[in-house]
Amino acid sequence: MKTVQWLMVVGMVAGGVGTAASAQQEVGARGAPSQQKPAAPEGAAKAVPPATTGEYDFGDFSSETLATKAWQALDAKDYAAVEAYTKKCISLYEKKAVEQQASLTDFAPKEKAFNYWALNDVATCYFILGKASAAQGKAKDAQAAFQTVIDKLGYAQCWDPKGWFWKVAEGAKDQLAISGTSYDFGDYTSQTLTTKAWEALDAGDYKGVELYTKKCIELYEPKAVEQQASLTDFAPKEKAFDSWALNDVATCYFILGKAHAAQGKLEEAKSAFNTVVEKFSFAQCWDPQGWFWKVAKGAGDQLNTLGTSYDFGDYTSQTLTTKAWEALDAKDHKGVELYTRKCIELYEEEAKKQQASLTAFAPKEKAFDNWALNDVATCYFILGESLMVQKRFGEAKEAFERVVSDFGYAQCWDPKGWFWKVAVGARGRLNKILAESGG
Image (tube, rainbow, N blue to C red):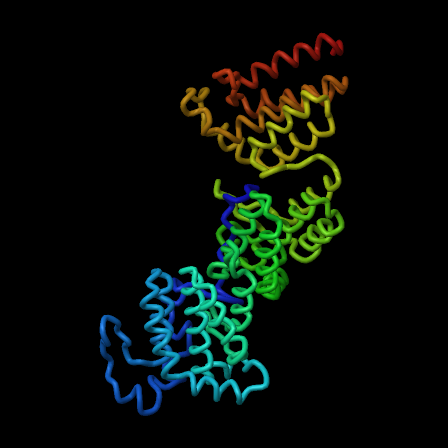
């Protein structure tokens, strides 16, 4: 369970700004199919053929084309082009957009939202213009653009090619809320928000954690609940990414719980972790080393250690093994059991695969490649040491025997500069148990 490095499962654009990269996949400010709105305003655009005006190509002058080009320019950080395309769209279609806004008393349902093409695309262009202004440090211009969306075009929706609309005014409010700060919701995908939440957690930026996790939860929890309901077991690895919302929303609750716990807000932490356990039990979080970990299991771990000094950290085998050594040195036998058994639970399967791939001890320059084998065997060794100190000789013997029988090629790094063979150490301890226990 790695923190920042865990790249969360691929999300989808919604709830705010979408990226130009996404916009490039589908036209129309991620807009409507071309048959659902005119290619250009009556009279003006139809009178002007597709053409290049100055250095900018306005294409067919449709709001769809102009908004799409604006997204692309924003993504390329071509702010002069952003201004050209957005202001052209606004100049041609704002009157129609205001008319469409006035005709509504609520957001149009999905099946009718494309009918409000001018409202949607003009608001989106103001939004893009605001983003570009903010990126250039033009705070007042950015605020004016975002405020225009909120005040004049409140029912605008922007189409995401994954299959839904997001509310442009909500995105504009988000931008105003973070104006003048280093916070940025990026492309609003669940992946981006979750990654930013991990980064904020690692930096001890708990305000950032709340911003990013709550935005992800706000945007994607309904989809996460839907995906959870569609499952009866954990999705296999090859299909786990399909449950992107479930995975990322659960992970955001997990991150939020970690942040609350770090601040001593134990009740809030408990609530966040319990939400994962109770509502998102089949969520999985991707570890870049090549597998998923079960978020509800991680939340359960946090609940078990909440209010104590125990912390599994980033859940890597290295971290867990290091903490186990530290607990052994401190004669904290409960800590030893917690950390060693967690490492064994998470990595024993990979350790066995690495053991099976070897016919001899790996040379020093390749020994670290067998990280799971080395750390799991070392954790069994540490556990055995702790059990010996407690005179629980039968259990200690079992731990050392596991090293000898299952992980014979494991090596443990000594910071002085070499590896020692864990099975050799375990055999020595077995002889000691025989001598001390008499059997």
